Image 1: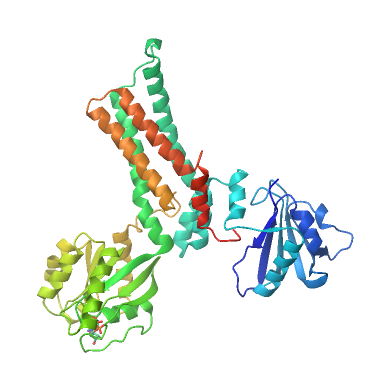
Image 2: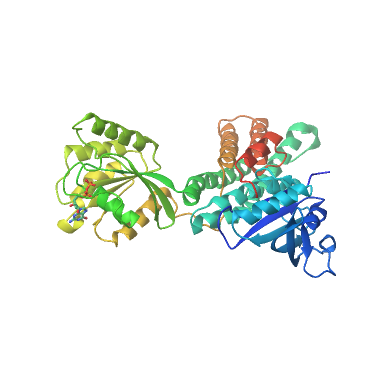
Length: 457
Ligand code: GDP
C-alpha cells in the first residue's frame, strides 16, 4: 500500500493562506487526527469528495489555527488518491507547525514532485502533461504559461498521437507485406509511402522548430549587448530596464564590466549582459572585460549589437559585425535622431545580421521597434501559444530522433532500398515517439523528469 504523504503546496513565505496537501489511503484518517470540525456533528473521515469543512487544527493537543479542509475522494483528485488540503493562515510558521502535526499523526514528507508522480502512476496525467505541470509553475510571462498550459491540456499528446497513428498504419501495412509475402497483401505504392512519411516529417520539423521559441517564452533568453564605446549601449540598457542601472556618461569606456540584469521586452525576458565596450583595451582589467564579452557572444541566445548611426561605421564596427555573423543577432543603428538617413549603414550591416533596425535609445517608443525585431529573430512572433509545443529538453531530443528516423525512411526509398529498410526506420521513429510521450517509459526516464520538480507539486 502506498504511504500517505504531505507537503506545503503553496510557495513558502508570506501570503494570505498556506495550503498543506495530504494524499494517500490514510489521508482522511491522518488529517482527522489534527483537525476538529467546528460543527461537532460532522466528522472529517466521513466527508464526501468536493466538500469543504471549517474547523481548527492542533499540534500536540494545542490549538494551532482556524483551518479550512478541502476534501477530494479517490480517484477524483489531483493524485488520484484520497486528498485533504488544509488551508491555514499564510506565512511559514503555521504551515510548518501543521506539517509537524501531520508527521506526528503518521504522514510521510512528500518528495519533489511526488504528488504529480502519483498522478502519473494513477493514470491522471501523462508524462508530457507532468512535464507541462512543471513548465506552468516555472513559466514567466503569460504567453509562456499559455504554451505550457496547452501541453497540460493534452494538446501535445494529441499532436504526437496523430503522427504515431499515421506511422503505425504504415508500419502495419509494411510488416504484413514483409512477413506474409504469400498472403497477397496489396503493396504500398512508393508514392503513398513517401508522401505519408514526408507529411509526418513536416509535423515533426514544425514541433522541433517551435521548441526553441517556446523555451524562450517560458524561460527567457541570455542576451548580450555589444558595441564600441559611446554608441549608446548604456542608454539602451536603461531604456530596457526602465531606470538608470548603468552609468551613462559622454566619456568613452565607462562600462567596464558585465552588468547582469533581467528585463521584460514584450513577452520575452532578456537576461542582459551589458558587456565592456569592445575596443583596444587600455589596461589588463579592461582587456579581461573585453575577452569576456567575446566569450559571452558565443553563448548568448540573442545578441544586440549597437552602432552609432550619426557617424560612418568604423573598422571596429565592422569587426563586431563579422563576429555576429550566423548568430541570432540584431543590429541596432542608434541615434537615428541625429541623421537623415541610415540606409547606407543598414546595407553595410545587413549581411552579418538577422535583422537591422534604426532607432533612438533616448525615445521610449523605440521599445516597440526592438520588441518586434527580437520576437521576429527568436521566432516567438510566429508561435501560436495555444498550439501544442514540446516543453522539455527530453521531449525535444526524442522528437529529433523520431524526425531523423523518418528522414532516413524517406532516404531509403529515394535510394532504392526495399520496403523492409523503410519498416526498420519507421519502427525506430515509433520507438522515439513512445519515449517522447512516456508510454512504456523506463523508471530512469520518469526519475529524470521528476528530479527537476519542487516539493509540494
Ligand atoms: P555606451 O558607451 O555605448 O554605453 O554609450 P552611452 O549610453 O553612455 O551613450 C553615449 C552618449 O550618447 C551619451 O551622451 C548618450 O546620452 C548619447 N546617446 C545615446 N543614445 C542616443 C540617441 O539615441 N540619440 C542621441 N542624440 N544621443 C544618444
